[in-house]
Length: 267
Ligand SMILES: [Zn+2]
Image 1 (cartoon, helix red, strand yellow):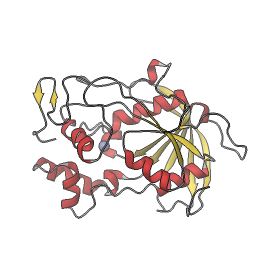
Image 2 (image 1 turned 90 degrees about the horizontal axis):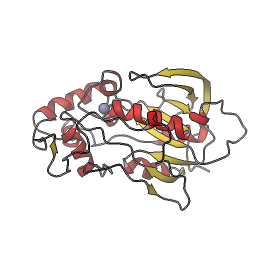
Image 3 (image 1 turned 30 degrees about the vertical axis):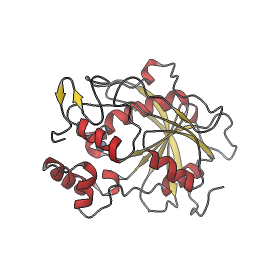
Image 4 (image 1 turned 180 degrees about the vertical axis):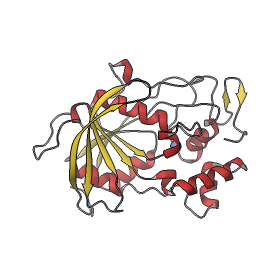
């Protein structure tokens, strides 16, 4: 049972066919909610074996793979290379479509500061501040996101335990405090390019994101013995796609991409 959470309920649910720019297509169940704590219009996508109607009958089986994706208009919609949100959205939808679970699309643009403020922060980053200091210089916390609504949505979907897809330990910590059992954390791929390399390195260094910027595929961090291993994706479409260059000559504190040092360059 979740602690001290205002009750939320599914408002509507319907089938939504999806096709991404790379041709990947799947069918999602899209959910809207009543009673979310911040009054915003957050949505959930049920994918794979969770793309069916949620009823009062509990779903049996392994904990669903769940991704908390914060809205990023520039990355998700416009394909901005300043961050990794767009490729992460595509990757995580593909992986959840294979494993079965939910993608929560949270209206938390710019780590919760909003679109205009995020673009203001980009201006400060162009002047030399990193992504966290830029938010602070604008009078915000480095990360304003509160995942109460995510816990409410998970509860409304009838889910008690989740395998959490992502590299941000704060999401798992907040969900745990809100009463959601996170059975394991499943890292996403690293979608690095020359424009976002400094941003990703900052997230790894200052945000404690578990980014495998050095080499190889990410490893899971099982939190519960016997938890489902979501690393093995049988469908090649589910595997992360990386823009070149990726996983090559890249280290967090001395960042090189394709032979260029980018650590000290503007993002
Ligand atoms: Zn983004």
